[in-house]
Length: 169
Image (cartoon, rainbow, N blue to C red; front, side):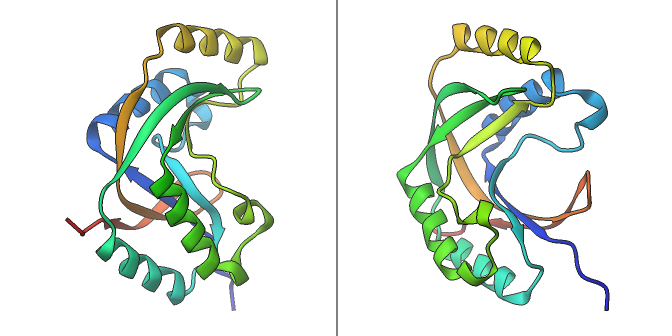
């Protein structure tokens, strides 16, 4: 029996925040390897099993929209990202980690450092230039987490499985 592709879990951002980050990603991420829209990854490698999807359904149904603070521009070595902070998101991530503990890779067992990458896999000088440019113009902004995105990893592009909108008011 063939092994199924691993799953990636992201936090869906409100339309204005998504548009802001995605426009920067399209402008600064190397086009030939930019398979994805801007995203905030919560888990990098989950198994494609019913328990994962069932828990996401349950959690999304009771989760309110999450307030996020975009607090700074950060260097990634060969790229640039925006750092986001939210105690609610960190608590939610810790809860999911606990539920999925047997499935998690070492990377996904680590604490969450929420960020949205707008540039990666470029020469350090290019990344440093963009970092300086974005830092000089940076002003903290608010964003919202409005749901989960569940994706299948396909070696480059991701295949969308389902969007789980947060339902609680």
